[in-house]
Image (cartoon, rainbow, N blue to C red; front, side, top):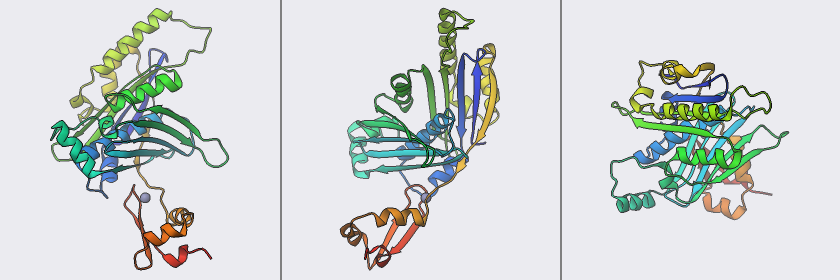
Length: 300
Ligand SMILES: [Zn+2]
């Protein structure tokens, strides 16, 4: 199975969509970590959403989807470069997580990601380098599911009707898989509209119902290509695939970048971090360890 996202149009460009299925990229993201199931599920789901959202944007650089909250998970972040490199990281409190789980008595069940984040926000950032402005959108984290939170973002921040679903599961051989589908009304260009608003509303409702009919076992069926799935769902809506993008795991951390951020820390903090004169920092994304001698970071 590939790590692919397809861009498609429906009903002669009235609506655009994305469908994504991730497999190996998730295994690579999870490989450096041993996290509880709920954390892994939340990371997998966030990665699928991040890839789908990134593919909606035109950018050269990187797109970041970040959620932060006051719950057991304090930060969940995925970023996707314009070259298709994806990485995801999480910060969570295992004790809080366990307490929340006992309170809800949902052992063995994958709970929706927003429950673990609690009150907080969802932030989209597009960073195209130093010479351009940072694009950023923020919305309160509200919704029963991550998909609901993302739909709320589009409604509030962009005023674009968007419908999306996310799927995450651990298959029989223990591998994590995540997938998603999104449809969106194209902004009307005013003037030459062939369809009356009622027609568009009807078509949009139909497209949403069809999107809703997609089953988990279908989207994860390796016998079906993403094209097959789209055709099954939307063959009466002139579905046209216009782009296929591949994704792979990649981290942008480096010794130089870490050195730069450590160098900006107050001397007092550096002293606290040092053990036997050595400061060890681990990348939250890829697990790479970097060591620095305290003397390297000492300001003269
Ligand atoms: Zn890294």
